Image 1 (cartoon, rainbow, N blue to C red):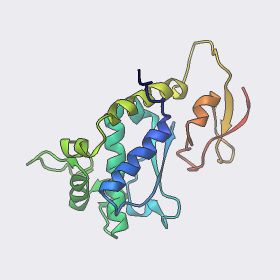
Image 2 (cartoon, one colour):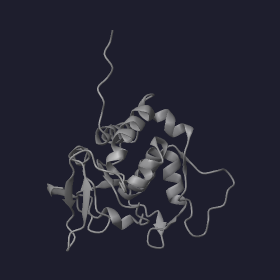
Image 3 (cartoon, rainbow, N blue to C red):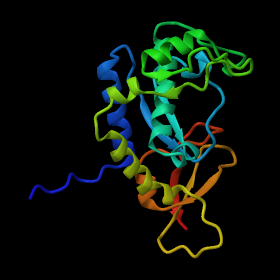
Length: 210
């Protein structure tokens, strides 16, 4: 009997997702995809990528809780912005909130979809493109299941726990804010990959056992 494939960590699956996307769209730059406990940023401006020396896509815990398809949509959404950024195309206005037609064009080229004939809301424009069959066709057949399994594995370690006794060792991890913000997390969850502070944009690092 052929043994089942080994379980893959969330960061491994996300890295493979980006590699597969770049294989189809080679103009996309290399990035690291990290997980954050903070809410997703509303800033999608052209300038947020800086000089391009350390490009990151941040997947929030909130997005992970919505499942694999939501994570894929969020990553491809940022890929659409990066595709335009690499080409020198500005695809948002109003401090990164309003997504213009250039964003829609890039998102649709990557397989996302905007409903035919639907007007863009004046506040956010074409921001809420959705995961569509063209995007699904670009993905390896087992990716959604593998991604969902990795998400299911790591989410309990990221979720805040209230009113229950902890049964596994946890560490205190601190960001680079002054004063530092702190989170309690298991070593296993911390090893899954960087967890980014939404304020200082630095990774939480282990300081001591809780």
